[in-house]
Amino acid sequence: MKIQVLGSGCSTCKNLYELTKKAVSELGIDNEVEYITDIAKIVEMGVMSSPVLAVNGKPILTGHVPDIEKIKKLLQEAKI
Image 1 (cartoon, rainbow, N blue to C red):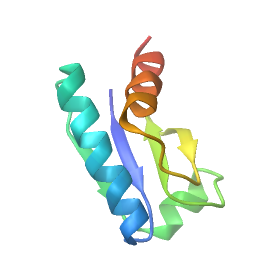
Image 2 (cartoon, rainbow, N blue to C red):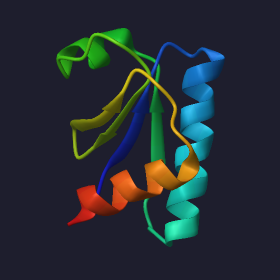
Image 3 (cartoon, helix red, strand yellow):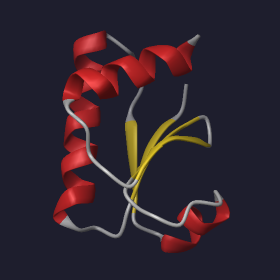
Image 4 (cartoon, rainbow, N blue to C red):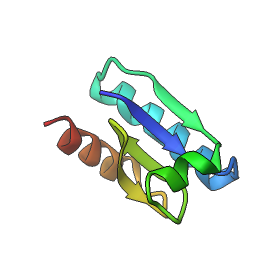
């Protein structure tokens, strides 16, 4: 599973990245979380708002930072 956080590098995007890394660790998922600040990559995904949480190149969350439990739930659903 490829996990990515995409954003402009702002504090909101960094917060999603840090929460996602923590969620991955708590779930025992053996994957690194990639942090991408290239806006072109966000546009390539067809998303117009950031931050973006993507799994295997598909956005599963856009435009806000939920709590860690929501992130864990999204990651578990994406893994199925």
